[in-house]
Length: 394
Ligand SMILES: *[C@@H]1O[C@H](CO)[C@@H](O)[C@H](O)[C@H]1NC(C)=O
Ligand SMILES: *[C@@H]1O[C@H](CO)[C@@H](O)[C@H](O)[C@H]1NC(C)=O
Ligand SMILES: *[C@@H]1O[C@H](CO)[C@@H](O)[C@H](O)[C@H]1NC(C)=O
Ligand SMILES: *[C@@H]1O[C@H](CO)[C@@H](O)[C@H](O)[C@H]1NC(C)=O
Ligand SMILES: *[C@@H]1O[C@H](CO)[C@@H](O)[C@H](O)[C@H]1NC(C)=O
Ligand SMILES: *[C@@H]1O[C@H](CO)[C@@H](O)[C@H](O)[C@H]1NC(C)=O
Ligand SMILES: *[C@@H]1O[C@H](CO)[C@@H](O)[C@H](O)[C@H]1NC(C)=O
Ligand SMILES: *[C@@H]1O[C@H](CO)[C@@H](O)[C@H](O)[C@H]1NC(C)=O
Ligand SMILES: *[C@@H]1O[C@H](CO)[C@@H](O)[C@H](O)[C@H]1NC(C)=O
Image 1 (cartoon, helix red, strand yellow):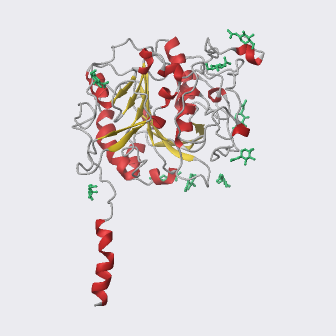
Image 2: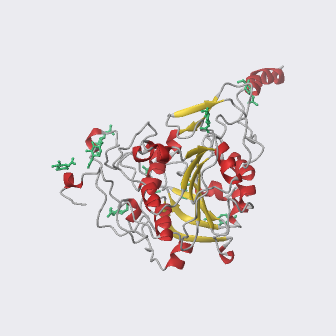
């Protein structure tokens, strides 16, 4: 009787919602999928590549909310680590997600401390301004985004993981950083460079993948609503074949596989970040690098590689924006040896225009027009940013 009672009591557990099991979203990364809304309407133009000092293509792939040790103990990440450089002192900048994404393309998170709907004014610049000055092609590839240039907050699609369940919100604007900047979203040619994974399939088949790419898997595949093992299965589906495809991983391609933030704010914000791709010298594959890097390092490294200008923000902060060592060593750029690693597990304490606490709100600060970035070029100031408000001049 006792045994039976226990059995009956535990029955509801059998029917409790199960953790999602990875399902390939399509036949493969180079084919369009019926599970993605929005079939492609054609490829990006094929553009003549602008040579860089160390790499000719930079691809960053962002996953979610995972501690360094968790990713480091996953078999898939260990396999990938054998092919690249694991950066053991790579830190996110704050919590939660959205400010980290925003900072990685604009050099600041402007005090933001939540995942709300933001539209950053059109006089605030991003990496796109620096790339376009040099005609370096770029795109943001967003899995499960419905249409090119989509500016909505989120989007629900049929749940391909469980077709008897309700539609699932798989796309989130908070993980698509450039569209949050009006300097990108309000210019149709720039908005159109936000493309979905069906477009990715068409672009790669046309040899049209651009030179700078930001890649966001959907909210299940990036570990946000799942875990690192699920993300690992996604990487086996998507990244593993692409690493062997020269149309993606060309002879001079550098790939950054990273996470937006660490899983909890109680300890500093160390994340697992890996450099992959054919631009990684053979002798450095399977090694680690303990230099201090942050999400600003992806900006400074790109600037250093192509001799670009800078944004005069966190991208030019010597402490926070060391250039990836394999690049700095080749270009002769001197990184800073950071001994006291800043605490970046804070949230909501940084003053700025997007801080929701009224007593911490400030105007959008001007770029530091005297800053010297890793690319050596001038600080980019948007034409509609009135420096005179701050007693400064163009
Ligand atoms: C990461 O995992 C490897 C084993 O795959 C281990 O040797 C190494 O010490 C770990 N790194 C850190 C920083 O914990
Ligand atoms: C392609 O064009 C059709 C028709 O305008 C549209 O419904 C679809 O969303 C477009 N695809 C993408 C990826 O934007
Ligand atoms: C699929 O969704 C249905 C409806 O929500 C649910 O009853 C079922 O448990 C789900 N299956 C799995 C494997 O999660
Ligand atoms: C955050 O990162 C630190 C440093 O790697 C790690 O010790 C800590 O475990 C991580 N967070 C959590 C919740 O464990
Ligand atoms: C940030 O991390 C430090 C060092 O691990 C810890 O002492 C501190 O309490 C953390 N801060 C917050 C806000 O959790
Ligand atoms: C650079 O970042 C460090 C660490 O957050 C900070 O202490 C310093 O004030 C920043 N420097 C400038 C010029 O903003
Ligand atoms: C707003 O910021 C002020 C100044 O740092 C602080 O004293 C106050 O507790 C904050 N309010 C909230 C709601 O976080
Ligand atoms: C930037 O643009 C916003 C929105 O148009 C405007 O309110 C603000 O005054 C501008 N700032 C400067 C410094 O030009
Ligand atoms: C720029 O700001 C200055 C000082 O606030 C003001 O006098 C000037 O009219 C502004 N220029 C424009 C184009 O808005």
